[in-house]
Amino acid sequence: MERLRISAVSYSNTIPFVYGIERSGFLDNYSLELDVPSVCAQKLIEDKVDIGLIPVAMIPKIITPFIISDYCIGSNGAVNSVLLVSDKPLEMIKKIYLDFESRTSVQLVRVLAKHYWKIDVEWKALDKEESINFSELEAVVIIGDKCFDLVNNFKYVYDLSYEWQKFSSLPFVFACWVANKKIPENVKKQFYEALKFGVENIDRAIENISSKINLYNYLTKNISYTFDKPKRQAMDLFLKYL
Image (tube, rainbow, N blue to C red; front, top):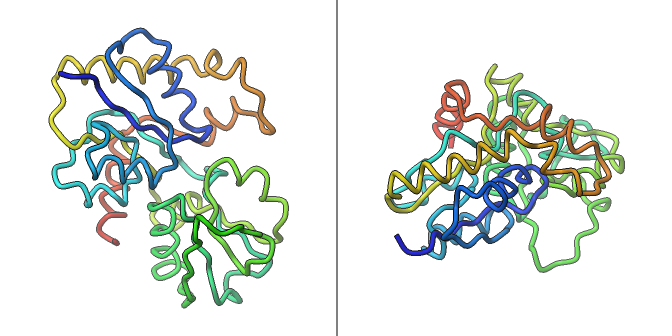
């Protein structure tokens, strides 16, 4: 096929994937773009890329989606980078602001609010163009690396993956590798081997990266990359709620 166009998420949790794609040697004829999750999905919808690491909530928006890998961005319990933060306890929250970078996380908090927490709140989407002072918001869903900077600024912190596990007794899947067309089997195999290389070499992937957190613990303890049967069950259940 022509050059394989790939969009991956630009957060720390994709460091192993990016390392594998760029450094494994399994892929040669490709281009790689790093985007926030919502942009990954939009590029796939608009056929600007062939493969995207997209939020699972956006999979139904793809006309012909093909999940092409047994790797994902998932978590078994607390993930530490998908949070609802507030200075009020859940039962006192009246308005929740939603991170514009996400699709799955903002749907997950809605599912939890309705079916688990049993709270009725007003939802407010944040505009990506506005200057956001998170400390002034009553409650806000935040995702990605900014969680590590903001988590200590709030009295109440609810890890959405942990809350989902308490609710469903299942892990959670935030993003999958999805194609918008059939990918040749040999290319899929090369892509899989590249991802596998990255996941199996996390220590090498992060050795030259400075971080405010213990990246190795985060990527090996909080993030779970294998798209196994329990995660597939969790994704199916989540999409049914949507």
